[in-house]
Amino acid sequence: MRERRRDNRFNLKGRVQLDIGGQHFEFPTADISVSGVGVMLDVAVLGGKPTGLVGICQIESPDLAAPVEAYVSIMRIRRVGHQHLVGLRFESISDEQLRIIRAYETLAKAREKSRHFVPAE
Image 1 (cartoon, rainbow, N blue to C red):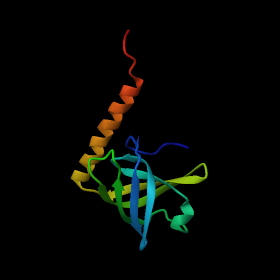
Image 2: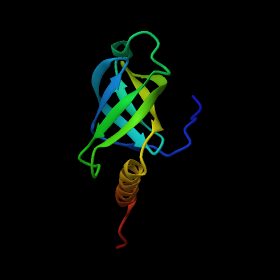
Image 3: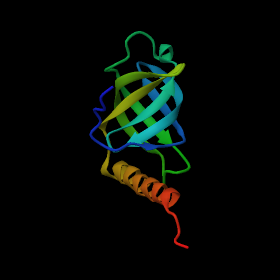
Image 4: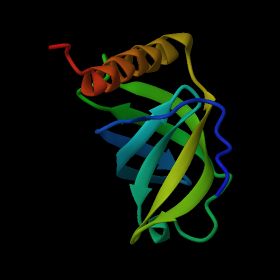
């Protein structure tokens, strides 16, 4: 499957609270970027054809400086094992919320570099 994302995504352990279609859900996060967040779920939870639905999400993780809140739309659904990776695209997000995500991206990149660092002997 061809990758269509414009922005790099970074794994994120946390949870997303999603209010959409008059219902409230809570899902584990899979990844995050400045353009959206991925969540893992059984797609039947959302009912019928949820792609395109718009709602409000709050993302919480010990790795984020603060919770992130944004208006989102359901963009893509891809099967991963017995669950589905659902992409929530940020439709409206404040500059402050984007700063929180960018700070996490910087942290995630630094962690990745330190895992690949081999000290000279």
